[in-house]
Image (cartoon, rainbow, N blue to C red; front, top):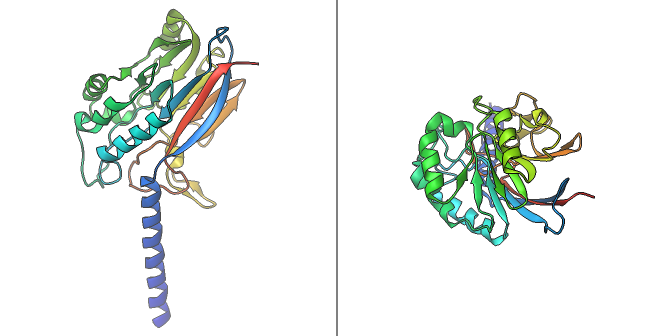
Length: 276
């Protein structure tokens, strides 16, 4: 009986420690991951650009209040990117939340983002489940350009923004047509990484989020869920496939539970320029 009590006490202590560690991991400062991508068709004489990718902010209590987002915005500005890209899912809607925020409250810190070529965003599945119209209004009110199966010329780039593929709102043909219309070196911002293999070879770079890199990745078992129809193929990080590059951020906030294990919050700083 005494042994059983000791085992139960040990299990409870270990569980509390793991929960505390996972909450700390979810709320820690994001890791900045840096990489360089060479793109064909880069204009002669055009300098390389630094692109900052942030995804899955999920503003909600307790782990991602607007005050924490404001600190992350300061961190982003300190990196001095030329262009900032936001890959959707701006507020959280989980039941185990200490506070929910409106889009106006949640996204107010984005007004302080600073980049010479601006800030561009797409919506994610949670934005469509919550209130896509409110998300769009709040983004635009805070100086963010929202793309929904559309494209915009940003310096030398023809930047396409796909609406959310997870909720079947993406329109690849329309987005590609718009990229061709605006011109420039084609690249795509998408909430989900799943459209990557369906894009034409001319799109040399795709930036995405959505997967949270698994968010909770157990030893030997791996992630509880990858939220992708390709399983772990496009779960996390930099993937080079058929001469093209996909970068998938782990995101900043959390979904379902305010915990992260084996998948810390991150930002990606991607330097793009001419190919060899």
